Length: 555
Image 1 (cartoon, rainbow, N blue to C red):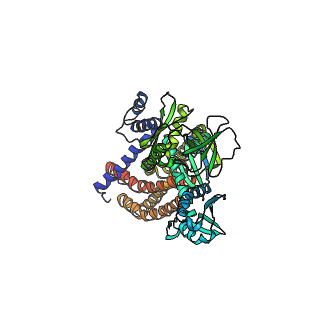
Image 2: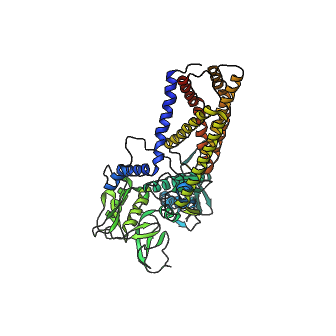
Image 3: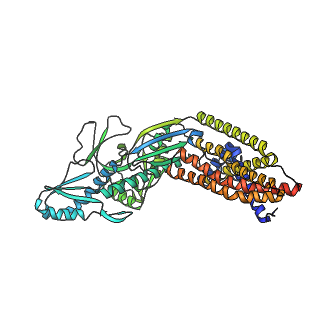
């Protein structure tokens, strides 16, 4: 029999040992999970640990691998939401923010265009009337100068604004290219902000991905309910600061042009009329933390960036003695009177908050405001009991499948069948090790892929053993038959597994959700089964041959 190089034997057994070591933490799942959560909390707190965190950290040695396979929604329980992003809201915000620039641009040529005023218009369209229609050409040129080029994958093709004339009116709206680009940015921004909000509360391994043109799929294992998840991510948390025009008790009061009538959050039947254009917005926040005010009531401290701090400081300096409304999602949290200039961009939001509400508000503001409102089209809560039942069913299927495969291989090939079963055990451990290291989420279809891998993995051993039998029947020596069996069957094994691996890759790329979970475990199982069926089984046979030196073998 051809002697296997020593380095190759060390490599094979070294990989097997690594597979066992990195798969081992999954045998102590709850302990390792508590250890990992404690380590993450201690790191987030800058190294300061509570006695409870130290106790949880001690459940698993720091020097051992601690990566475990995250469990999916169907195994761990949690919440599932499908949300639609109202991208049209972003068009309106963009156009509303454009009005001051259009007004200032036309002010420079007022002697040619006459008086300028904004007309009522539908969402996403800005209509501006000029009193001297003869200056329309000059007005259009000034407004078009505000447009910026839109960069796409095919290059710079058009501008972001369509500016046209309708009689004596100037009509401004986003171009088709800009609308498409805005849709992409809005969805991506929504995905990122939802992910940041979920990560802020320490939830492990959420699934947050785009579906279709304007929908977002959110699945968060381990969270209590869909209502709890909606409370976390469903709020846009759009914070703005507006000059106050007046206060009223009339819910139907007319706020006047370019003003808003907003209710007070914690004052029943109290409304504020504020200017529509904010002085500063939450987009200019750099930090927000829960705190307490001078009366020891829960509050939220905030910090603006350089631009926001400058605007905030200038406005407060120029408007001492006037009320200033702090607005969250179209509700006035408070409207304090400016007592003095507030330089540095640091302030505090007070209101009738509980500690939990101030903490959640800080999380939302720190993660950023959603660019547009989300409408929830589908919501489900999966209880942990259902997940536990799924795990038990998967474990039972895996045990039954492994026993059936083991009995068949031992009955068909005797001792060599036992070698194949041992290699199969190493194969499963390597699958779990790889899933743990790469952080792939295990779902119920993923368990099905592992069970299927058990049956497919021994196919290679069957090909090898049948080839060895043929060589023995032709009178070859045991050593020669083993060499030929492992050598000649290798090409057939590679060909059959490559086609299966290609199918798994296609399922992963084209599919989503459960299909991708199945594809991941199946693909990893195919790669590990090729290694264990050929190289690990051969290494076990070499050990047996070297130890017993048999003159005959039975396969």
